[in-house]
Amino acid sequence: MASDRITSVFQKAGQKPVMAMFITAGYPEPAVTPDIIAALESSGADIIELGMPFSDPLADGPTIQYSSEVAIEQGTDLDSIFEMVKQVRITSSIPIVLMGYINPILYYGVEKFFEKAASAGVDGFILPDVPVEEAGLVETYCDKHALALIYLVAPNTTDERMRLIDQKSHGFVYCVSVTGVTGARDGDQVAQSVSRFIDRVKANITKNPVLVGFGIKSHEDAKQISAGLRGFVVGSALIDTIRKNYPNSDWLDRTREFVEEIKYGK
Image 1 (cartoon, helix red, strand yellow):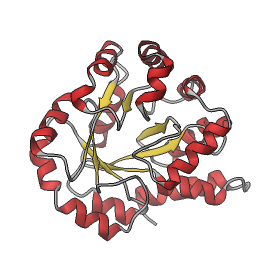
Image 2: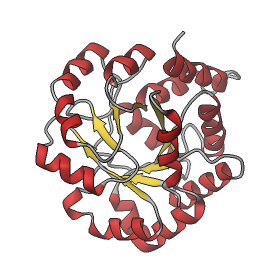
Image 3: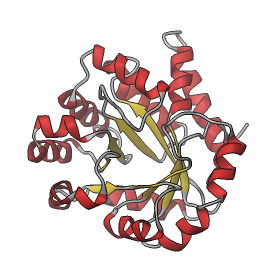
């Protein structure tokens, strides 16, 4: 089963934190997305969150909005994303979770979308604008194709809803560290926000491992913010690094260095 790759990552990690890295498919150009994924994996990434660019990304801040605009302008669509995943699967079994929004999926055709995703080698999905109470159709096709459906919890999520999300999620639960959109933030600010509700997360999310995201930009951030959870997600800070260095000849080396620093420290 595709989602077994996600489960295996947590089993192999033991007590070590799991690091998921988010990149936007097609950024900075479609041809290099498989190369970026390979670089992330070789630098310590355990899970890849591959963003499906969309023109109205309600959960994304300026950095990921920018990367989505660039990817869309260069023709990145769902079919090209499936081809990227197929290319990665020739040499890698790293878990790949597609993260995006429901409108492109509805336009594409829900059944066709999940069939093609499974065939390409996708492991699961994070769909921020699909609430757990309204996800029946998505859950049906994810179950049919053994794909993980990962929900999010945030500081304004009630205890009751956390328990429902825990029961409905597969693979892991995504803990949003602050109420707001994606983007690198001050580590102390995020840690204080997390500390106010992390005990509730631990008490209510008991079936799935929890990864925390939104705001991590350094090794110290990762350690501080994910303390007591199973790991963390980095997105905007990674894209900022690529944007700063691309298209210099050493941009991929600089990307690897950033990922290694996040995972292992300097």
